[in-house]
Image (cartoon, rainbow over all chains, first blue to last red; front, side, top):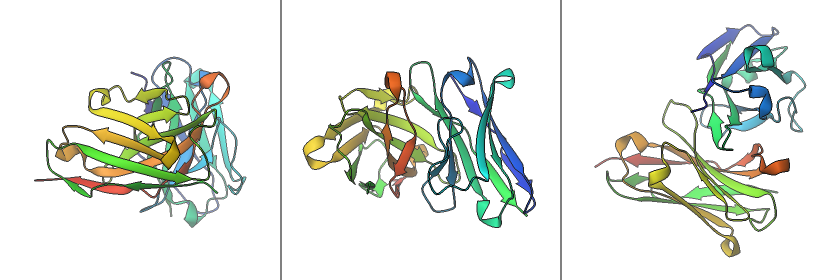
Length: 111
Length: 124
């Protein structure tokens, strides 16, 4: 079964840049689009990146997404960190049968 | 404006069947490319995709839960219903429904609109 692996947690200071990885267990992560969702406590997830590197309207350009085929990973990079960015982040893609797969989530602490 | 809202029981007993309804507005499930999915999240844990139904009645299920899940749609009522049989305490979670659009080639798109979620507790 295709799986997406994320670090359990990351932390960084305000104003800095942080990158969250999402590694595919098999195949090529570049073959299928990756989405990134932000989830604040008590709220539903919202999209911050879709189709690998596209930002929905209203999402600041401090958020960016990329794919690294050599490591079979997707990455979410947040620059100019703000305390409001503190949240859980989930990557999502799909497998060869077009079934949805979520990563295990990464807790971002901005301290 | 697209909105979705989940409804159903907040408490179910072990072995019972859970029925959840997603009532939506702002789009039609008879429009080509539209899909509605269900995702759940146990307290303090990660998101888990459950099922997805498309405008053409194509249905997809999580392989690990497929035997317990059924997803249906009622286009006239703008509703999607998920049933999960043989509930267990480990199924305690917040259940979300979400809107998606398929991309070229039928590839699943982004879950761009989510309901607020409904917490279901499984306990005797």
